[in-house]
Image 1 (cartoon, rainbow, N blue to C red):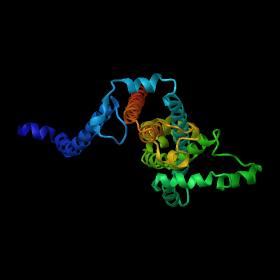
Image 2 (cartoon, rainbow, N blue to C red):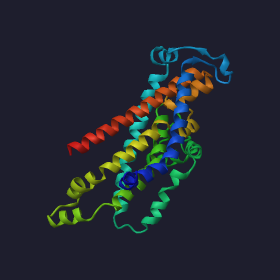
Image 3 (cartoon, one colour):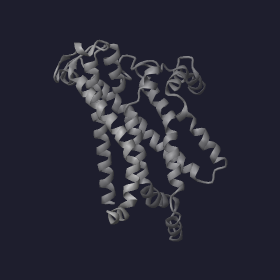
Image 4 (cartoon, rainbow, N blue to C red):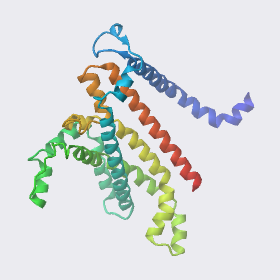
Length: 297
């Protein structure tokens, strides 16, 4: 026993310290998921007693997937456009600005601190402020009118989704900047010095050294942001509430509408289960693609 402890103490001690927190989180997650699945299998009006819930089997899932009036497919389309568009723009802008800040920039600490403001502001407050900015006589149209002499209807069905995507990019691009800037500052200098001696230019340094070394962090940050973006609710709800119509009806807003507006907790729980399955599936897929890319490299 003593030998076993001496040989594995470096593994036993860290895992022993992590185990209590892991068990608490794991048990809460399992308990919540079990109840969520259980509620998705009944016909239950939100606010009524649980004893009045009637067994429904898979009918809630069947309605969401096959009913002609189901909003699920439209919501999936909106969610896909929203998530892919915002995460891609945030990654590109965040990496570009992180590269700029990684150079010899005067006042870098000030700029970095300034960039944290959108992240720490309460999402509901962000939604209220930008709702005012996107109003017909708001700040955004004021600036557009100066440049183009036009005013845009950001509350209309054509521009409501781009409006919430712009807000998301403004709010969460600093997330990528801070993480990727920290990664860039921790990169080893030896590969760059060796490449410069061999006559490499800045583009080659970026392509053959910076990008491969930053790939794990880029993938990790993207996965974290993707998981969070899939469940975004606050800003979209405060700005447009999923409207006009279903233009900004993402999956979390759909869950809200079904559960609290239509007061159908069974169908709302089924939609929540589908959202969890989507998030977990995409995360596993990204992790596998990441491992495959690293193995082939």
